[in-house]
Length: 309
Image (cartoon, rainbow, N blue to C red):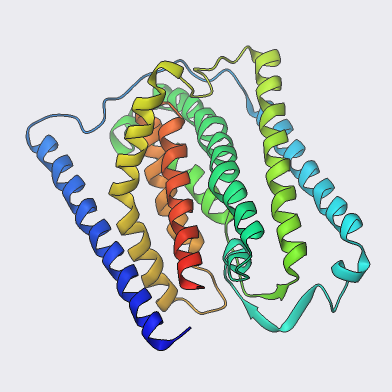
């Protein structure tokens, strides 16, 4: 890239971040004003305890692990040893801790970009929010509610669903933990990404069938209320504008502070998950959290594409 073009790109990116920061500040000021006036920022929407139990979560988790393993084996068999065997599969002289999507976007291939959009922007947010917010946090909220009845002191020390949200967020951040790894073959990475997306969709479909047949779970139980869909989309977009600037500021700060061999994503995504968990706790609907997650992934993908021009 010509130095002048790079300067222009950096200037444009800075302008976008500046606008986003001002929008974020405006939303936070509006929320503070509501609190000052004695109004709730979000109205709590109660719902019945989720009907699934720990056994159901273990079964769904095992299905997901089995499908992930099956996809990995299938990808290796499909591509063959000429791509998936050392030293072709990876370049030990080039390594970093960047996300697989960022590595793929750097190839500047339109088809790979489309796959990244489908996997990271569409499939991953839906599957991850369903698994973490609906299944795991929903179950932990039910357990936590029982403990609070037995030990009333917990109501004062840890109000709401603090513990379920924090536990879910810790696991969510841990799932995204990465360290420095060698650069791998682009076709292998893209195929694995698609395989993981397919495994996630199948797992989610199996989970819905299992929960429906075993415990009679309804659409409301899994956080979907059709008549509130458009209102939930609007709420999700507003929530994204409120958290995007702080999340990216933390990400950039940690990227500079942490060793290059460790990715900042787990720490940033832990904070994001706290926001998503709180949003889900107050609404008990999954669409707002999915919209926030989708918007953040789409923005990150656009930034990666923009930076690798």
